[in-house]
Length: 242
Image (tube, rainbow, N blue to C red):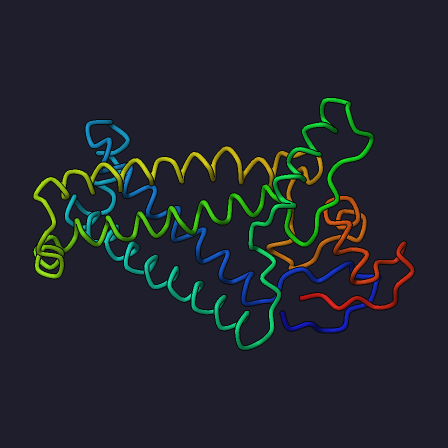
């Protein structure tokens, strides 16, 4: 990725403004989709009826959900396009690709937690947990987007793919809602724990808000990247963060 000089005093600049804004927009979009989607899935619950009333009725809620869904489709598409362009044209390192090392890192950490190894896995820019979560969101997002568009435009779906069986629509509804519930659980349990409640970052990992990570945190969580960019204890000069 593009890099800019940065001294040791302020820590390591891990994310640029584009990724910071992208994350905040994605989080807001996800929250609205979850709220409006759950209100439809659990429409018999009192809280759902209250939300529907506050938003001006079920049609207004559905319109908001579909509008945010369309935004999500475009948002996901731009993320994938930018990633491909950056890797193929700008020379960015494909640091989110899952490799064999990620599986061995998971095993090494398990051995470390069980006291069978004296040090945790030595991870690079992204560890195996971050990669697995990232690809879960990307692939799950493709499934949610595809099933949502099919539910929104069923006539067009059957026109473009005439061999689709009639059972595909109820199946798409189940896939859409269940995949969305899975995404919610992953974000609520895994992502929020790692970003807020994990002992390494509590009370909050501020990197995605400030773009920076402390050198100590980086040395502990991403030692290979720390050594590559020349962190203070590694004897390097100014860092070259992405």
